[in-house]
Amino acid sequence: MELFSARQQDYVRPYLGEVSRFVGKRWSFGVIWELRNNKKMRFNQLLSSLSGISPSTLSSTLKSLEKNGLITRTRYGKAPPFKVEYSITKKGIDLIVASSPLIKWVMKKRINNV
Image (cartoon, rainbow, N blue to C red; front, side, top):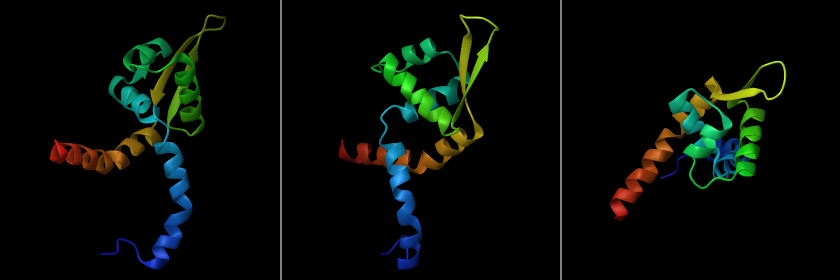
């Protein structure tokens, strides 16, 4: 059974790389999931909640997610040390909603293989 016609496949093909690049980043979904559940978090809170992530990896992941408009970084204060909080954007929420069928598929696959 074909999910996409040949014409639709040609339309979808250029976007597959972008999806793969995002999904292939190990910590991206973890960060946006934590921000979805906690509304606003500081760097060390995220670091504590994501077991196994290094500070440098978290830093680069946050920069990438902010660049892509999935999270926002808000800095408070006029002089260092600044207080910085991260929160999820509407675009980030949309990504979680869009990824729900994929997450359900993985859960179902695990349950059936146990």
